[in-house]
Image (cartoon, rainbow, N blue to C red; front, side, top):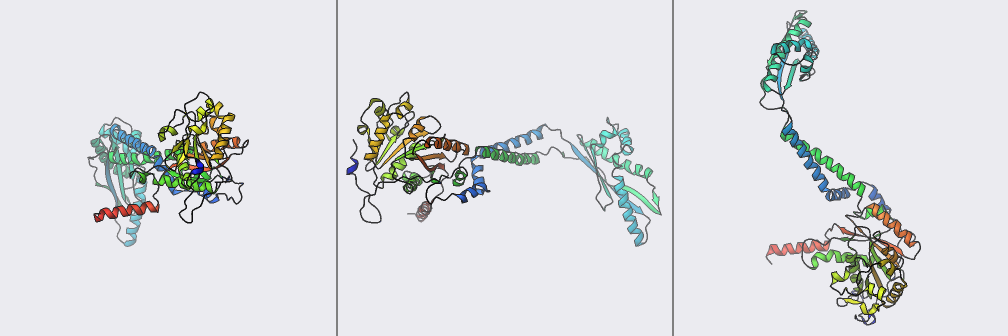
Length: 500
């Protein structure tokens, strides 16, 4: 048996004389509450571009981005290994006009030479030039097919022509480039006069084609880098598509974009570093923040239901933390594990799980005799008890109404822990017996669609009862150090450096 609630130590405040904390009041902090202001600034932030949200999305979907980058590298490497190497040989030719004497004649000859060069560019890939090359080298191809492996370039205001030949065989590419550079002056001499107005036209090879020593394609280093970049970009796009489809509730702005309900608290995951209480300190402080947020929104009610969206697994942790934080203020708290299907509160706390709420509802046992204390000057717990075949029938009985009425008379606050809203009808039954509902949402797993569906279900249930949803609690949020934690960390580092 636990100590009588009436004999417990009153609340000892840190700032003031000894006083007894008045019973809590629970109020609905919704849009209809007096003085309620919509979270317009958070809605705007949710709609806008949020750099931190983008970085958080990349952190959550880094595996998708990494998979895309790896896929790009594999494709680039496979292409480098399987592609047929090709080689490019280049021959450079220069057109000169002889015969100009005066400066005016030299300028005119230079302009005329540049015009001739531009007219020779399309001539290179015509049968007039390539047919003799095919016959001379005995190539097993046609001039039209050979033209597809030849590119010609002549810069504007230049008298130079570059002929590039790309073939799978390096020596063959060099032979074709030499033959083309030999045949082009012949074809040009036939089609254009060798001299005009006293100017002598000469097209000479200034850089003969050489046998290339390295393949032009594939280039493994370049293709691997290109595959990495392209694959990473594709992975990034895929991650954004997945994120847009999933839309997890990563922060207050994401919640504000779905509902006008306030975010009562953001509960981080326990830190990985540190030992003992240092790991749980951020979580405990968040539970106290949740307690204060509920104190500001209470309106004469005492039955609080803690439930969650699908995939939220922290209802037990939050219910226990809230009960402990509320008991710290001197309030008399009873925590009831009302999840008769998967109740785990007794196992986690090391309490007796052979009897509990199910025993009271099914066997008509006295619930007061089954209440167990949680720690010294803590709170009381009514465990779920043995598993039963039809929890919905028991939770809908009048016996539960009597138990909750008696508990409300003995305790200041009664906290009911339930499963998620959509998993069964049990939580809906409990919702009708609560005064206020605290809805949990996992910042990493709960999507906006999940939250919308749960809120629609709760609105339907609340329309036929007096229960109101107090707000949202985001769980498993990324923990950022508080100034107090940062200061302690610096102090420990300073002591280590000084050898203390």
